[in-house]
Image 1 (tube, rainbow, N blue to C red):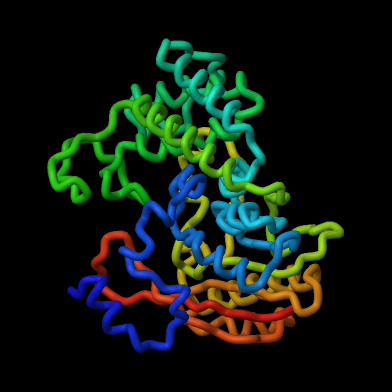
Image 2: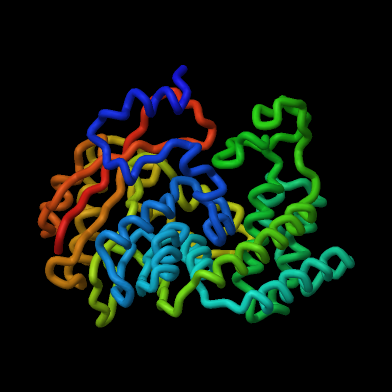
Length: 379
């Protein structure tokens, strides 16, 4: 198996955009997850450095950029740092929550005050006003009773912090992700709870199922304080709006966009609602998974692919209607099925060019070479 360095040596002469492809030593994981980008893990998210480049190349401070697949809010966060106004749309209630929390203008001192206060109350044994309903079967199955009690106790404290309620909710969800009874190396889509000691591929030793969530609530509270302060020092006064809506039919009102930067879902790759199931269960979020475009559970049958093409066409066409003539669409996608030439044309966009980027992984070793297409089009 080739190391990443060997792989990049082989690709040195390939037809790639050199500014969009990085080896691991050039762009380590800590840089890809700087400040609020790591408030909560998110599988399949944009690399923020890509968005930085696209904003520099195609937008100016004061412009308004749209991301119709906001995901974890990467486009919106980077736009706010560069003085570009932004609107993000996502059908997932958790994605919308996460994007709002990341991009909100926030006083770091208030965030730290509330995070530390809630943590102190939890560690002092305060239980807050518990919800009368019993934990859902999902929560009862995936959490040790002590871990679930910690999570529910923290959830009961959220109402006491109106200025930071959503921020604390994200801390709760991040802790819940880590506190599930699953192997440390299998946090993305675990298939069954792990209730006995197991050989951990991440730590190369025998590990034990998690039995408490309090340690994660503490760890992520302190980490969030640091990340919020780092972002606040960079954030401009640019506005960032998050719409929890279906991008195929969303009402943009009277907004007029200067362009689009987005990374659409790939067909048959990820179930974005299921990825954050614990958040939906804990917070009682609106679950719209049946309307998710390209969800993995739909498979890759021919009719599913045709539905994907129609759905993506509808999203881009609706965005084009509200984008000024000539506004640039930057679409980053794995177009290995060669669908986007059809989609771009059907959406009424004018193709400009197509670039390729090589996608690195934090492990530094890989079984195959993975590329993304960067498609540029104009309204």
